[in-house]
Every structure is written in structure tokens, then in C-alpha cells.
Amino acid sequence: MDAPLCQRYLCGMPVRKAFLVLPLLLVLLPTRGGALVLRPLATYTFGLSLSPGPNSQLFSLFLVKEFEGQVIQSEGITREQFVLQAQGAIPSKANLDGVNLFHRHQVGLCLHPDDNTGTRLLRDCEVFDQLWKLRFWEYPFVLKEGQHPGKGWAEKRESPSSRQLLLLTDYGILTLNGMAKGDDVFRLLHDVGDSAWVDNYRKGY
Image (cartoon, rainbow, N blue to C red):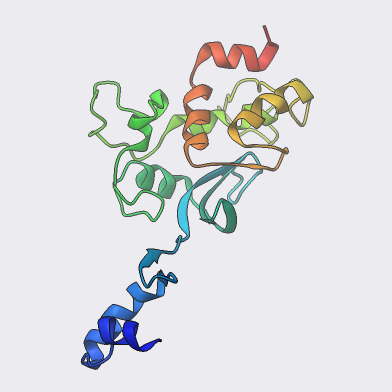
């Protein structure tokens, strides 16, 4: 560290205070003029893929770490963790403000029908029971007795058609196993609950 920066920010401090200041200095870059500017930090957001996940789930959910627009890490999370974190019910690196992202994006299938403010929280969200239909035209697993998941929306038996894949690119899903991230996740969850969007996805206009 050069002498002027040392004198202004660190030197002469007690060790304990110096350790408190060091993390801040690590995200500051000195310019030639001596001013300090913030260095970009990695951020977290939510991710969703139509690839089957653990516990026979026909989709996968993630906490995604990004740096300068590039994914540098993704961590799988459960459906329950996603629902609680997205509502701000529990702390989340992808929802630091603790807002109800389902309410912000008007994901109707994840909102209490008698709540217009997004303050009544849910433990689960039925929109996730519809996601398999984007990829398959028949439920791909053996059904349990009394289970009636309905028909899928895909135009091909085991995958969406090229037309449908093109629609999914609008949400950042560029390949069959691609991932929607950030606001695109909630836009897709919103649209899956929109009958007009589903009709267009299934048959086209």
C-alpha cells in the first residue's frame, strides 16, 4: 500500500480496527488521481431450469452467483427453500431486501387469493406443478394411484418443438437444459399461470 493511502486508511490503527477496514479496502481500487472507486462485486439471483432435479422433480431451482454478467457458480435449492426465500420469509443472498418477489412480478399462482399486498405468505406454490408441462406432452413418471397431473403442453413427446424452444429463449432458456435467471424466472412463472400464454405455447396463434 502506498504511503498516502496507508496514512489515510490503515497505518497507525489498532489491529482490531484495521481488520474491520480491510474488507472495505479490498473492494476499492485507487485511481491515478488518488480517488477510490468501487470494484464490482459478485451478485446472487434465482435460477430455474426445466432439467429434472433431485427427488423426482421435473425442474431444478438454483441460487446463481454472477460476476460481470457471467455465471460463476450455481447452487441447487429445494422448492420449499425457493418459495420461502422468494417471498422474503427467510434470508436469501438472492433477495437481500426481503421483498415478496411473487407479488412484485404478479405470479398469481404463488399469491394468496385474499391478499393484495403480498404480506400473506405461502409455504408452497402450485405453479411448480405445471412446469413439467413445458417440456413433456405426457407425465414422464409412473403415476401413483389417484394422481392425475393432466396433459403436458409440449408439441413433441419428450421435448418442446423448435417453435416452443424459441418462445423459451425469451426467458433466457437458450437450450433444452438452459437456465432462466433473475427477473426472467418470475416472468416465466407468471406466464405459466396465464391461460392465453399457455394456449399460444401449446398451439400457437
